[in-house]
Image 1 (spheres, each protein chain N blue to C red):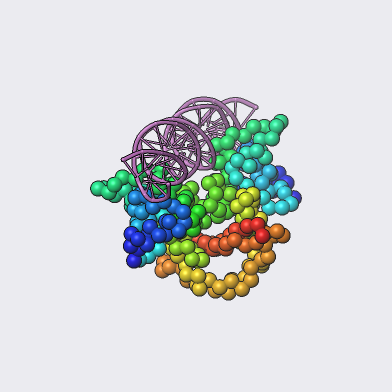
Image 2 (image 1 turned 90 degrees about the vertical axis):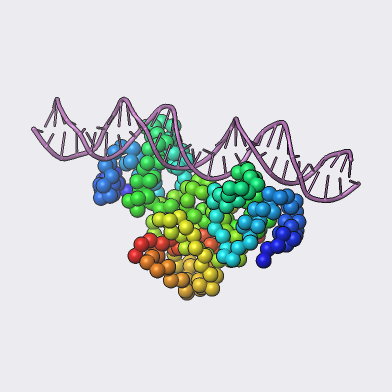
Length: 137
Length: 137
DNA sequence: AATCCAGTTTATAATTATTCTAAACTGGAA
DNA sequence: TTCCAGTTTAGAATAATTATAAACTGGATT
């Protein structure tokens, strides 16, 4: 699905030099069936499994920031102390389970908004995110 | 509006011993016309203005946590590195301006949801928060 | 009103997540 | 092959928050 060539193109098209670190991280992020919700910490674990070429934590942070700026991933709202990111960049929403600290996608069409407020003068809406927090029934 | 007696009752009713620190913090938080969006840092500044009896930063954090647990304030979703809190505990939503890092309330009736998803099995919805990020027009 | 003690406050240390720094490395243009 | 801007890296620095443990206090009990 995400061949090395595609990944390299993706990087090139956003002015990111396709280094081996970025290619490896991109593979781990985008070569999946399901979209991926992650923090710097979880990505670091996935990337630096035993035996792999080691990538420094600083590079994990740099790359996440670069991919975010390029629009390949998006940051998710939570009130956790860590930053959460999502490989699903289409407009969609999330369930958040405070017990497990896990996020789940909510498909865009699962939420229908009938009315939204006008933005303040001089501003326009950049993004609308809904987080539905869960608790045990 | 929020007399000392009311504040003491509020604290007592949530099993918080009405210490002078908590009473002072509660006054600063709740004795206002508008609801208040704050971080530990901004609350600390408001509480420890020159001349006031000094309250330690640890107590600011302890009290914010205690008030949050008691439901007197609520934490707001952002993807900022600091935690934001709101003295408005009624269900409502927010505009977020990434430029100024300022939050603004959106009245509950300004948003009408026509459809929301069913929560996963075994879970129920605890809360639904909408954050509308803004950008320059 | 003196005593007492669990709950609270405090200064400070520790921790956690993230960003910075500056030296070494590298992709790819020339 | 050379070169250099862009990138990676280990480790230091920073920022926000939490933990620690000693001192203090609200208020119940005497």
